[in-house]
Length: 291
Image 1 (tube, rainbow, N blue to C red):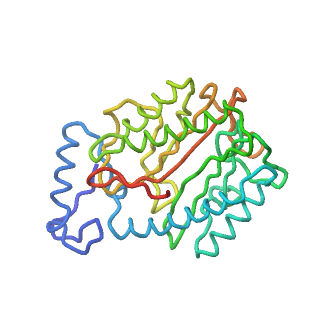
Image 2: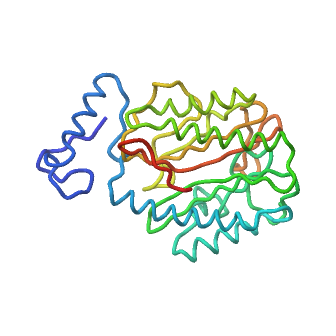
């Protein structure tokens, strides 16, 4: 439910205008949709022009870090070398790695290999090998604004099965992004992703998903990668969130490492892949922020 404001108070969007001269009619339209049974976002989920511009600057750091990783990812690279490079590029651009110390996470990046679904530790002892598939999940903070995206890497000669999983997962992300339309629904995203994964014999992890991002690392809304089209929260221009499907070659179930309470693996030991990007809902569709 939207916060009620007095007509003569400053608008919630930060424009400096009085509410009655700015977003009052926009809010009235959303309230009318809510009365029709639609789930609508809060004001906090709708970013203003300045916030969007600052988030985009953070995204430039995110892109630069992953571009640097592109140049070194090959068999024989160690997890700690990835972590060191993330720190080097991020700090050189005046930014901070968002994962470092986030809820106790001990590294600056996540590197998840083969059967790891997410949150893999970039360890010195973890040497990536010929034939591995690796997800590198990078998140950055620049002047208090957050960005978050990930890429998959196929190292050397990868089996056809692994290559297909990586390609289909990227297609799932792309279809999820293409499902983003102003005044569409969050469920449209998950429906598109899940349908494509299942058509290829895969399963999507349903309880780990995308999220709002920009003012904080993880904000509302939760973006499920399974769902029913035409259901869920309305997608309103100004919303920014990640789409990051985790697609498993086997079942959707996963387990979390009991020793560190972070690293997530497929329960059946089969491979998993993930691609991630940040999306801005616009008046005419969407804008991809991190590629």
